[in-house]
Amino acid sequence: MDNSLDHLHGSNAVPSNIELQRLKDLLAPDEIALSRLEEEIKQAGEVLQTLAKEKKAIEDRVRPLKALSSLIRQIPAEIMQEIFMHSRPSSYSRTSGICDAPLLLLRVCRSWRDLALSTPQLWASVEVAMPKHLSMSDAFTEGKMNIYTAEIRRWIARSGDAPLSLRIRQDYYIEGHDNFFVSIFQDYLKHSARLVSIELRVKREVLEAITSAIDAHSLEGLSTVRIWDASYDLPGEIFASSNLFKAKNLKKFHFVPSYCPAFEDLPLDWSNLTSLSIGASQTSRSFFPGDFDEAPFSATESISILRRTPRLVSCTLMLPSSVAQRPQWTQENEDREDCAAVMLQDLETLRITGPDEELATIIKQIETPRIRNFTYHPWIALNRSPTPAFRSSPLLDFFDRYGEIVESMSVDLLDITDDDFIACLQRIPAVKDLYLGPTQTSSSYYHPLTAEVRGRSIPFTDVHLALLTLKPHPLCPRLENLECAMPARLTQDAICSFLDARSDAKNIASGVSRIQRLSFSSMQLDFPLTEFLENTFRYREELVRLHFWKDMHNLPTFVAPMGALNTRPTPWTDDL
Image 1 (spheres, rainbow, N blue to C red):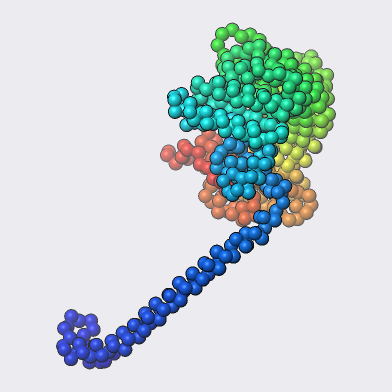
Image 2: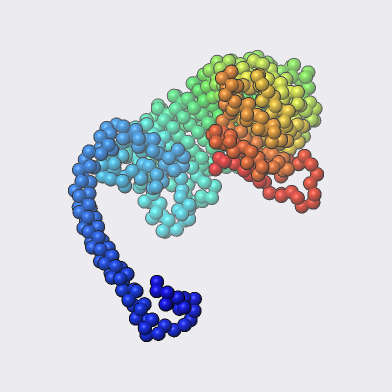
């Protein structure tokens, strides 16, 4: 720039006419260049628009041709049908959702719609439940109900000759629509020869109306019955005479009423069952008003039923507690018990829940040479003498017999001693999945008449974790998933040592399984989760799933200053 104009920079001086002319002369070449560039850009933009139009025209011509040769068109219809079958939501309760398969498949294209409608298996399984927006009783709702009923009937028609699986769920807040559920079930009964599975979670009145319309001889293909009775009424004769239980080919039977009828009197062909799940959804007779002195579902009745079910592969027993005072346990009483063994040659899964004395009786009297999955969740009645605190002998005897073949175990060891706890771990060398403590779903079965789990005699500490860590022969060497709901008093060093040992290549080469999941849901409040998160990042990079949760009921290992403890549970998990 001309030095004669330097005085204008950094000042408010007004340029003279000569200086203004000088500025115009200096700007002229650049303004010409800018005009030229703008014109070239405009011309280039017009060329780009022309090229874009040509490209779009070619794409419009090519797209249909490519579609004719696309991979999806080359997949055989049989494979597409299999893909459709696997596209259904895993949640049974969403099978009729408009945004999920199979209804979603009807809106993709004409060929998919035709293929979906010609695949009866897609429509053979359904859950019938009352949508919340239809729970009211008015003229508008009745019209919508008719549409909903018609849609379910279309499902039946689309299922062709495929075996039918029906689940009816009546939520507790639904009132005044009992006839709807009954009518839907009656529609399915018109195709009773195709019914292979029936699941009912309905009120007692609906259950009685449904079962009264059943002809047992027409249910030749029925193999699975699952019933949850949400009522609090006393049982009627309906259970003892239901034709639903008389299906001659019934293999799987799940029956959880609000409290237990005489299960032995049910008209079942017990010898034909391969899967059995029975018990009460309530743990105590005090839920029911009036005089009701019959003995609850007990170990004695359980053993009697098990004697009649020699083909069981899976068994779940949920025994309720009793308001009546139970006799105090003594070794003399146990010696007088009928200990004739019940052989369950094919049983692979056993889940038992109930009073500890009843469970001890069951596991003492059964023989399960093929057991693989074992769940043991006892309750200790508050009205019982606490002596002995823990009856370890029956459980340890069971582990002595079958611990070496158990691969998955969930056990809640109430008031167990440290030595007995270690003895239990020593007896399950083949276990892959180990869950210690109360299950998250067990709270619905707990009642004030059963002891809470906070009164445990031992927490899970570094000592116990070290037993699963020690080289070269840790306890439970095949362990892959460890979940602990017992109160835990652990340090970072102990947890990291365990993860190191269970991730070490040399240990894995020697036969120790790599840990895949580690969960402690009742950590002490002073456990440093933030620091631990930083120190364990490398394990999560190796795809180890970690889940840790502080429990406000789990007292800290130090006395914290006033106000230092947060009373809200503090979760940290990378499972989300």
